[in-house]
Image 1: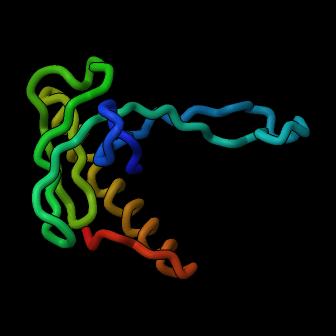
Image 2 (image 1 turned 60 degrees about the vertical axis):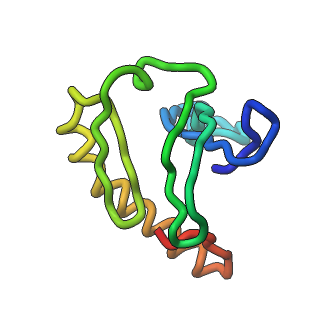
Length: 121
């Protein structure tokens, strides 16, 4: 999700993950019952090109976490670039196809309700 970077300029990326239940009791009557909340982590990014040629070339965490340290393993699909620690390469590869399916569903859903998808990949 694009947001404002640590220097106040545009071009930051907020990597989101770690979904958790806001409240497990779906019938509790609370407005947030059964919702899944997401915790996010900010990164300043560097890109080259534009449009279909836009490429992410570097990212720097706002607050380094354990998964931001050391060598990385990267799995690429048509609409997803998924990364993780090098010693978890099997997990990254096993998750990449599911992430691709989610990305395709998101793009199709957005387009299907008349939204604009600004990237092709």
